Amino acid sequence: ILKYARRQVDFSEYLRLLNDVLRWGNVSPVTQDNIKRYILEAIRTDFLAGKAEALNLEKDIFNAQTKNPVLRNEILRLYDLHEIEARIPAATGQALKGFYEAHKDSLFYQLAKVNLYAVIDSSKNVVDEAKRKYEQGVPFEKLAPEIFVKTYVRKRDGTLDTYLVDEPPYLGELGFRLKLNETDGPVDYVDSAKGRQYAFVKCVGIREEKQLSYDEVKPTISEVFAKSYRDEITRATEDRLKKKYPITVYTDILNRELAAIETRKN
Image 1: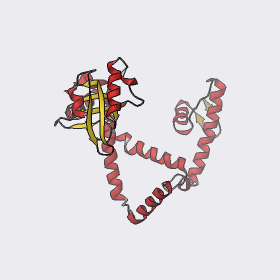
Image 2: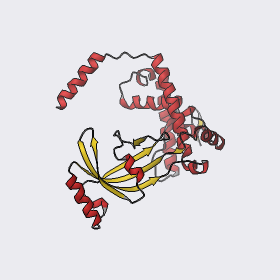
Image 3: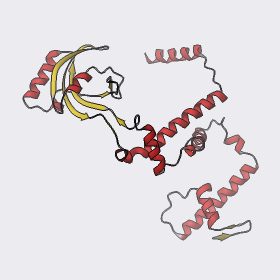
Image 4: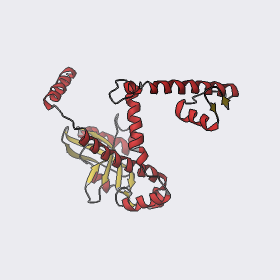
């Protein structure tokens, strides 16, 4: 491809320049002249990088103590790539099937779930009025300025959880008694933060509890496989680093700074 005093650029060297030295970038159109310019720039970049390395400049720039935020992020990215991503097993068909068999009772067991729309207010009159409008044909979504969406999951031991929200399942038992599109209310309950509340609810979604088959999880199992191993390797790596580099937390100083932040907010 190119020959000059120091060396020549053949196809393998061109691939090294392309993959390890200088990104091609958004060069358009891909013409012979543009390729020539790219090769010359990549050679110059490679030459400069070699000189910098020979002068041991890398230790002053690319090190764990660097204050450059771009380099710090790049170091973290390369560390994760080498220590975590590279250790995730290949998602072969055999590996995925083995992973499914080992985790089907946990990761691939579908819990029962119910989705509700709800009008909730501390005034029973407001909720009564919403129910009256619904009975007159007003769509549930337009009964009030704010319609709450509540999702509840029934775990395998029969207990209920509010899905993705740190809130007791106040309407959970009611939700699991309803059929699809069925309504109920006004019902009342005591919210630990707001006191007594009244609700008029409609069931808008039901998912049955069942064991998912391998064919059912095929579209997503590769992602679950990679995430599971990534989380496991990340935890192990963090534990190893914590043991190797112990951290001292000065609780008094931390609490003082947190208190100062809260004071500034108020």
